[in-house]
Length: 97
Image: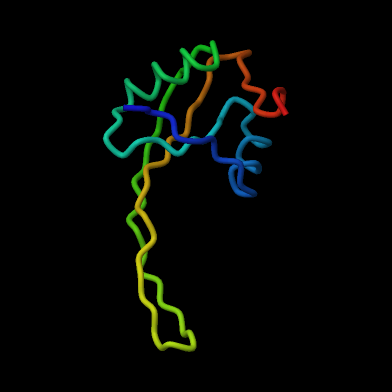
């Protein structure tokens, strides 16, 4: 099971990171525990993780009108993790671009 799916680089998460420089967000596997998330971040980015906060977002129903009629579907549910790093630690997402 791959624990970390992708980092969260949104306007809201960027504002949080600017206010608290040691906090970063990730979309993670829904079955992953806080300990697994902590271990995965430490292995991948070689940093010391202080805390992990998680939240599960349920998928929303979406409906749109098209030429063929009403199309309804569902967005996927996902789990988000906010990682707080230890004092003096940081992650640079843009170094490999």
